[in-house]
Image 1 (tube, helix red, strand yellow):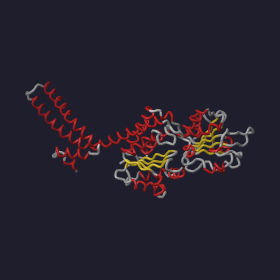
Image 2: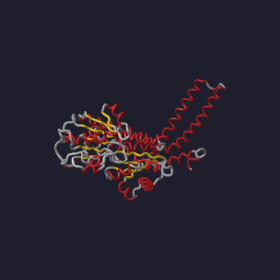
Image 3: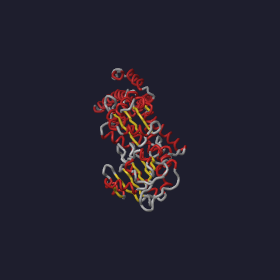
Image 4: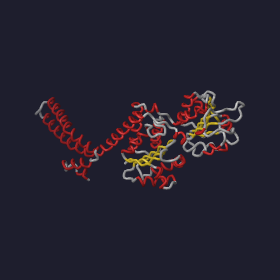
Length: 435
């Protein structure tokens, strides 16, 4: 059975998501234990943490126990924030997630790539399974189907696009705005594209892992060395942080005594960002796209600094056009039902194999008999070939309806009835089917 445990921006605050995110490796190892499941894929993004398990017979409460142990969270607290999806509901949920329907910004485009990377990582670590591979590959297909059939993803915006739209009036002139990008991963690439779409030109990049130089060279921007970070912060008008650090990189100490006073908090301010003409200190905008946080919440208390984090961005996420979302959800539901039905059909395979083996065995005996007669001169060779073709065609037609019916029974969850019927009709060759 497929099982999904999900903690997202709807049911949990950012602090809880951060706590779980920091323990991703431990969670994955725990849930991948063969005693618990046949495979596990963890999907961790900026506003959700999900674990997909291939775990026949595993009760959800036992899966929650494993998640609680791995995260060190009380079972009750985790259960209150965690949603559980099973079987077809797990497939439908992942298909909706990969299509951007469950994102804070409905229709965001980055999530499909994150879903793909989640299954790639699980496969590389040997923690995937056939069931999970099929589930995630179909999720990618459904995401593309939603993208091409609806206008949802063209209407929806990514979280970084929303964040930049929220600070647009504060920046004023994007061409002269000095931007520091922190991080060099996939989300950094999306953030850079969004910044350039707004007209930003003076962009530098810093990487805690030391990859700033290579990222800067490939993207045509300026790298920032470790020793130059504080100086770069003093001269930046906008900081966009999207690194994968486990602890805040930018703390209050980096900003004390480096800004002017009097800038109002983000949600209470209007007007443009003022920049000192003398090149001394200035109010700065900080956008934290990281989970765990890249920027300590305490930075927001520093006068002259305005911090925009994921919680604030989610609160400002727009409502998408209803028609596109309804169409997308219909695609997702249909795909989930078909995926579940195809999985159920596999339960009919033993009965189908036995039925075909019995009938084809009789067919082969009859063809050998005819061939023997032909070799003895009792029949013309051409006529024998025609007879064999006719017999095989007849058998194919005779097997068609039982094959269809066995698959239908399996789709309806009645595969056992099909196995029992084949066993009853062909008892001598199908005794193992009733086991």
